[in-house]
Image (cartoon, rainbow, N blue to C red; front, side, top):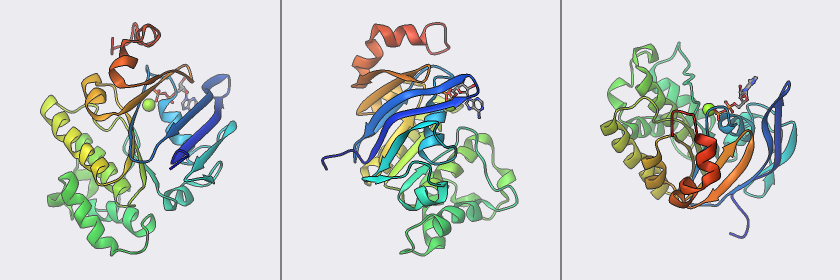
Length: 241
Ligand code: ADP
Ligand code: MG
């Protein structure tokens, strides 16, 4: 492919006086795992929110598979093959675990597969099959994050944006999850991963981009980027140093 699967050009998003995104250009290539890192408040979640259609950009363009999706609503972007998880899980609290995943497979899927079969298979994949018929309120935060992941996966995305799905897990859980995320990529899904644990970024990502104050300050292979003095300065005084 000669152009990126996802391409963001000159993306700006202001909240009052806050420039959450201040002119971001980034391309995501089909098949890659792109790490999106940066200190707290640097604009990572805002970038995901704008790209997935949750909030409109102040300026800039977004293309998905060559199609201009700037300002499109989330359900249309989802049907075009982009899925995301939320940093704070947002389950449908009246529904069961399986019904939550069905919301992905029935309304976001490609229409070619049985939504129930997809939901069940996806719950199995993320390790929540035994909770399928439980109310979603029975899940803890860690499980809710994997429910988010299942709901996103059930739409059969070409590209999946993960916003801190591993935060709060213990080291063993992190390792298991990294393996699972690697599998998602091996099955052919392009990934953008927001993650603070650097060993995870180094293990999972082919390439990393660094945001600071709504601007891209570095881009390249994980180890090189994390050794960059400007990147180290950006992280100084944060919990990741
Ligand atoms: P990150 O995910 O990198 O921690 P965010 O994208 O959440 O950063 O936030 C970037 C900046 O935008 C922060 O200053 C944050 O306070 C601000 N911001 C994000 N979302 C909103 C919002 N809905 N309303 C007002 N300010 C926001
Ligand atoms: Mg965030």
